[in-house]
Length: 454
Image (cartoon, helix red, strand yellow):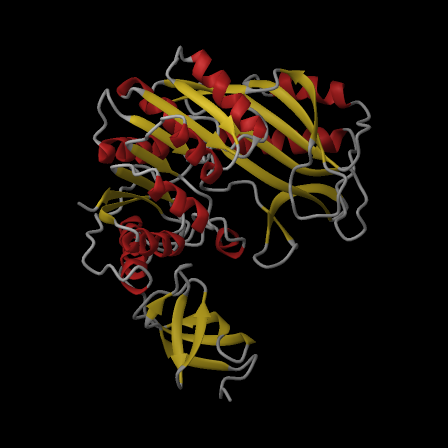
């Protein structure tokens, strides 16, 4: 039994950080996870949640500060999880992220010798997000935008999100105020009533084209076209206003049905000199500047030549494969989302790229078929979601016998698990480069080069 009791206060010294950047203190061996606390800080903590194996605490008083602490601009950015590392200096954040990768490679992948480079960071680690998905609620009798308090659906009204393009922050306020003028009813999650659920804004980093997506509970949008025209009038960068209809009682933000209320159905932007069309539900990395660093690192690791056949698994709208197409013989992209493949084909055409083919399906099913057709990839690029690679994919990728696999990861733990599996199947990881795509948060991307064992 733990000796720690809920609502009691304790004086502790922080001795570690969790992978989410929470301070960790131990009371008689019992771990407490504490927001806004750094190693070596002595604090008075209140135990706010106590479980059998661990609990959560809240800082009541701080007796000393770690030299790497910086002033938090807005505590709501910590409370909401928007910027959970904003109490750390940026150099410290970068070292923390490198250590997260080192730790899992040692414990999960059992690859303690694998070199992990210093995290590549940003010159300005703020105002980088090109997309915002902002919930709408009724607060104090009016339609309000903000972000949920962590682990709850209590809305914290926020206007400056710190990590978003400031033009997007301004657009959210403008759209919110227009909706208020028209007395549009905010969605009530408990009762599944009301109308407007989310405001989503996308803005091209280079093009500055802006898309406003209004996620509604029902299809009928009284004065929707008029509202869209006023949004355009007040926000000159807007080239697209979309209504997305989501009638379900769900945490999923967007529904399947969409209507164009004003302008185009897509916006355009560039990445590594290529142009991309981005539709409302396209996956497109939210930090354009650092995505260019990430993809360029992956391309450099592959040391491509004009004879290479490349498979771009999890290709999305084609951003990785099209970025390198002019360096190789052919690119084969595969993705399970039909709309993404349509976008990838359109993007290949828009950029005049003729040596890239895109197909809908699972890579683990398509790669064996391609092999039977005589397509033998020399390099496979993978950029999977947080859950990492499916075991069937790993087996299929090894079976087609590429010389190199370049693994772009957004989750160090699943990367480490997958590298262990590749190692057992004869593909050695030789170097890892973390890249900070999400400053002020605990997320870390990385690029790993795997080479077939001789």
